[in-house]
Amino acid sequence: MLTDTIASVQPRRYLLNMFTERVQATRAERKRRTTTHIIEAAERLFQERGFQGTTVRQIAAEAGVSVGAVMAVGDKESLLSLVYDQAIAARIPAPPAAESAASAVDYLAHYFDPFLDLFAENDELARSYFRTLTRGQPENAALGALRTLTEDNLTAAMVKAGIPTPRARHGAQVMFTSYLGELMLLAAGSTDRQQTATGIRRTAEFVTVYDEDDR
Image (cartoon, rainbow, N blue to C red):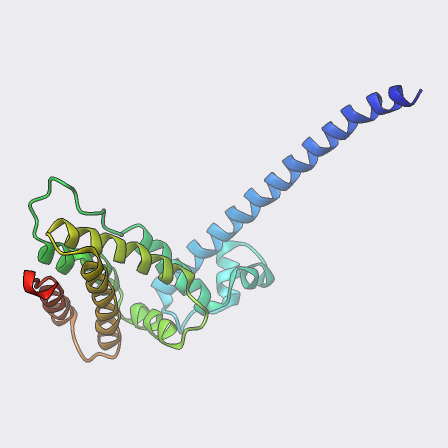
């Protein structure tokens, strides 16, 4: 009977769907692990040989995959961006704590310290990363996400200090733009780590000045 046929097909269809889902999950996990291995291999070689001294073929050999597998993740510039994106994400400061006694100026001025310390670890590699950002290739989605999170945190610090939200939001945008500008100067060799930090602090002092008459 038709009902018997349907009853016998449904369990098989359920098992087939379950098997397919497991296979897809396994493939996704395998792809994730491969991507992680490739990024880690690229980072090791970039640190050891420099950006210019590393080839995609060497990265493939280090990761134990094909050149095609590496290119599926990205070219050298993309891989360098991924290396720094992950390192930066791990260093993003926490939002200002409600009970913190730190001033808005101090919070803003030191917010970017972990990133500057990261870039100072390998000047040559950092400059290659900055050049990648300047060219805008590849498009860096992580930088956009960092900007959003950073501006939210900086805005919260200024609002906590009594600055109205619209002005605080504008100040946070100015801070992030100033940070990128200071990075470009650092990448060009026009400034050093201390001068960069000083420039960022001056911007922090500027955007946190607020008078009731400014409303």
